[in-house]
Length: 375
Ligand SMILES: NC(=O)c1ccc[n+]([C@@H]2O[C@H](COP(=O)([O-])OP(=O)(O)OC[C@H]3O[C@@H](n4cnc5c(N)ncnc54)[C@H](O)[C@@H]3O)[C@@H](O)[C@H]2O)c1
Ligand SMILES: [Zn+2]
Ligand SMILES: [Zn+2]
Image 1 (tube, rainbow, N blue to C red):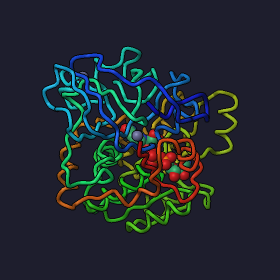
Image 2: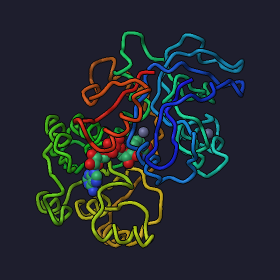
Image 3: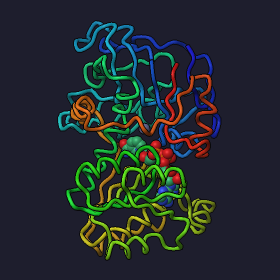
Image 4: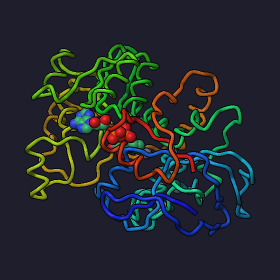
């Protein structure tokens, strides 16, 4: 089959790989109809996540038609149309029983975190779904059937960025009448803004440096701040919110734009990747406020602004979203017209155009926000 594979840092290509096969009784194989590229894939391609190797199949936002089922699969049958949330979860360990599916204890023999599709050996070594076919282990737990009347584009993001953005607003404690700062206006940041507005936030302030993404945020009703126009973005945000926002949600992650000092620290290997967004968050939040790190981090950080968080009694939460927990809830909202995420799709391309797709998404070219690939 054709698949998009990692072939070294900044090298992505579509090429032939072996077809996946049923390996365990509760596996299914799906024929992929749509799959998307996520900001998390960029961290892999930039070489910022350990455990990547040449030929690894990328992709964790995937849906399709069930092609084959193992004999232990009770929930699905051949021909069903399903979305596949990005965590691989057993469904019965302590963490799965507490709905913390991204921390499953039984799906990653290489590390403590739970398994994730297409996210390196460190996250369980599961081939991803930017491919013609995907093997889905533990198929009685993760995949969810979707109604025929909804298009792929309407439901595809149930696999990751819809649950992730909603979860971000929950761990950041966003409530009616709050002021929220959202750092990063990529797909995750934009959907986060939408949830904040739906939850009745009084002010949402969107921060990025990419003009067309800020304009998209403005279209939702957010105030916008281009962080490149301020020497001290955190201090500026604190000022315009009279002491800081109730909640700050970091939708940037470890390869955000770096300050000069960070570039030096990175070169000296004192830290890996950027912490600029965390720095801004530590200043932009009010005393006793909440900060959520939804953007992915992984390495050690020097000069982490712990003092700013501690002295001002900030609640800090973070992690990989337990996506499966939110699928039914959001699916209902999509069905009844309460939530729609299709406006962020700027490109629909073939798998063969995968390399180009990664390039424009990474470089923020051609007004790219979200790419959907059609195998
Ligand atoms: N926690 C989870 O479960 C989960 C799930 C999905 C995605 N993510 C993460 O969410 C993050 C966003 O994903 P995306 O698909 O929107 O990615 P993206 O790369 O399209 O968006 C990131 C945006 O942040 C902006 N940015 C860079 N530095 C910044 C800074 N210092 N301050 C403010 N904005 C800055 C960029 O210009 C870009 O528009 C990524 O780190 C991704 O890995 C996490
Ligand atoms: Zn993702
Ligand atoms: Zn489990």
